[in-house]
Image 1 (cartoon, rainbow, N blue to C red):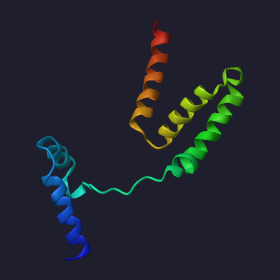
Image 2: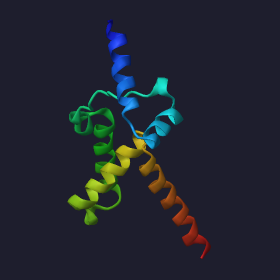
Image 3: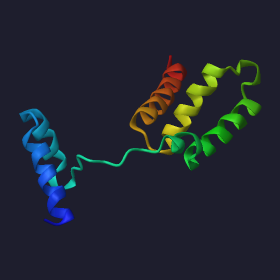
Image 4: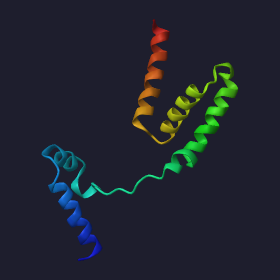
Length: 110
């Protein structure tokens, strides 16, 4: 049995052991595209990855230019998470950004 055959047998066993709803979710994205054994993410990327480093620099610049007196650990953390999410195309960050832009327009029309 080759490595690929072993992987496919394990993948099929996981799929067969799933609930009907779980199988439907897999089939929605495509069984061939589904990877039940993804490599774990390196937690250092969250802190030292290019998006994280750029986010730190942008948040620092923001506080220097805009909110020096409002700087706090909690606000800095939230802005860092939002910035990193925008840089990595995270759906949550994009929704927050879109809401802020929408909200600003509402304030102008009221």
